Length: 74
Image 1 (cartoon, rainbow, N blue to C red):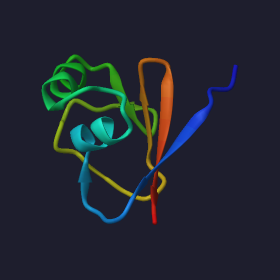
Image 2: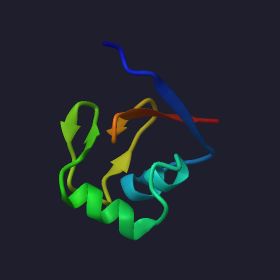
Image 3: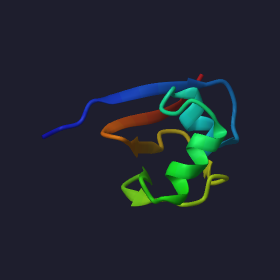
């Protein structure tokens, strides 16, 4: 079953994983992002990522809580 991907547009890099989750409205705040990332429930490009400060790049795919988000730079 294919998962729908939501594009999240940012104006500039770098952006960290925790910031990206907030921008995508996947979490309410940085504390919630930290908890989920450290628990290993967030994937970047299909790999579990446990570093909140992980820097993302154009077209990275972040999956969390049954949703997928693609980083798009505008």
